[in-house]
Amino acid sequence: MSSFAVCPLPSTVTTLLATTVGTTLCCASANALNQVQEVPFDAQMARTRNRPLVRRAISSGHASTFGIVTGLAGPAILYSMVNPTTAFLGLFNVALYAGPYTWMKRRSTWNTSLGCIVGAVPPLMGWTACGGTLIPSPEAPLQFIPPFTDLSVIPMDNPLAPLALFLFLYSWQFAHFNPLSHMVRSSYAQAGYKMLSVLKPSKNTSVALRHALFLTPICSVLIPGSGIVSWLFALTSLPPNAVLAWASWKFWKSGSEKDARVLFRHCLWYLPTVFGLMMVHKTGVNWLGWIPQSNDEEKAVV
Image 1 (cartoon, rainbow, N blue to C red):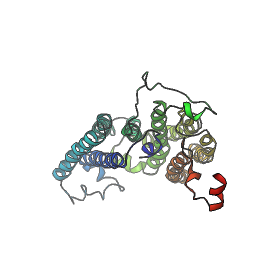
Image 2 (image 1 turned 60 degrees about the horizontal axis):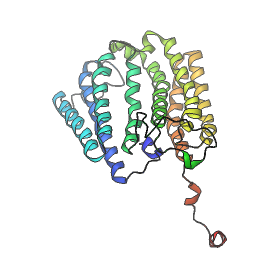
Image 3 (image 1 turned 30 degrees about the horizontal axis):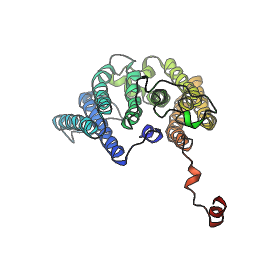
Image 4 (image 1 turned 180 degrees about the vertical axis):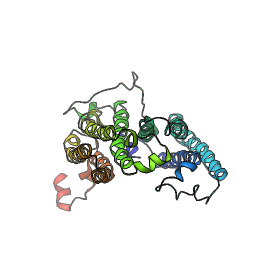
């Protein structure tokens, strides 16, 4: 719900709750339908062999029913309580994850790229839930906001903002998943999954490095250029991006499991830290105004 929080468009708590519940149900559906199809393969991997379906704690029929019900309920809630665009994105994500992505995992290394699209769609859902548009139009043109622009002329609905958030999540997932897949590559190989970490280890590390480096211009140019945060974010986001770039470079250089684990752990704190910085620098929000003033200060203001 980070994109919902940073979106400058007005919304309500009811919309926030409906978006949260609807998106959660869509995620539950996608995961359930994915695991139903992968029981024989999950049983071969140490990190997945304890899943309920593999242990037969629940049947495939029950899991399929749960996946279908939540896959219908999630978009239905989004459609009735949020808007049709957000509902379509939720349904699209369920279909993409449970369909082409799951199918492609044992057939092509491009499955990771497809999976990263799935992970980058929720920010679009948060944006559209607030009433924002994704496609440029005369009413909401794509605009780049240069530094020192007057706040009064910054558009509230700029399609560049959801695009920037989508690219941010898309690139972060490669920096996050590629070292993880490197650490469990033997399990992926045993189960027959087509992963770069198994088939092309050197490319796996270079892709992680490439997308970790992409995060810096995304944070320092695209996101503040969309107008949702001030240009101070371009500076304060540099330290976490530098740490991630350094860790990904070490992983690329050595290809070791130790450096893969270090990069993976850095990715865990990186995401909430950068989203927290977005909230700190959100355009039009004066966080100091929340601090109560003393009586003397109030009299001085009057």
